[in-house]
Image (cartoon, rainbow, N blue to C red; front, side, top):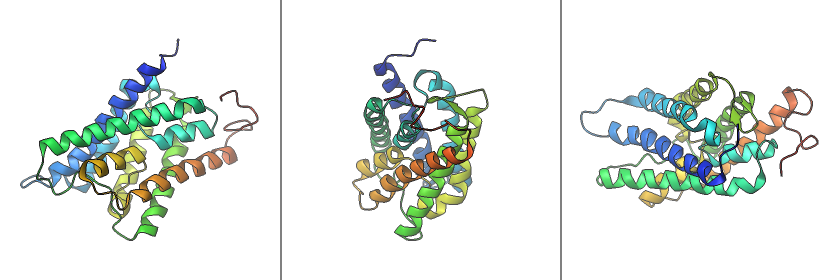
Length: 230
């Protein structure tokens, strides 16, 4: 199958990340309304389900990275061209910001737009973001061929991992694992103070996952030596 042009793949990343942030953080906003009862578990499963849905919807077009840290992780693993990391990241962040602005317009009096904030201290939140993103990226590398998911179960595996991490990590750091997911609400709300945690943590976690993948996979997997990507 011929690969889609970069502009189409970036459009898929923009819309996929828009859907991720609108549904996921939207569930958090709605949960804060009087009479709503989505709960922490419901929010975690919303994030997992929307990731799964977008993988099935646009995975064959762009790979459904939906996350600058994932695009970076694929590049480190030499499964994704370095020249396309920036266009993907810009598209993902744009989609996230648009989703958050739409939520702000819909709920101007909302106490939160789903911002990720540390609840147990900045250092603890950073450690959790690194660890959770490592787990997520390790799973993604394990169920992908190149920079795209393989098989019908890939979406379930990745979406399930997102939900799993959100279940136990959400109360600690917000379980972002995704710079775009945190940038969108931060920009829309103007609350940028703790954003550095959600930039450094996921990027570091993706790099750790690449190293782990090289340790446990067959020789040549995630290796610079056998890379053909640039």
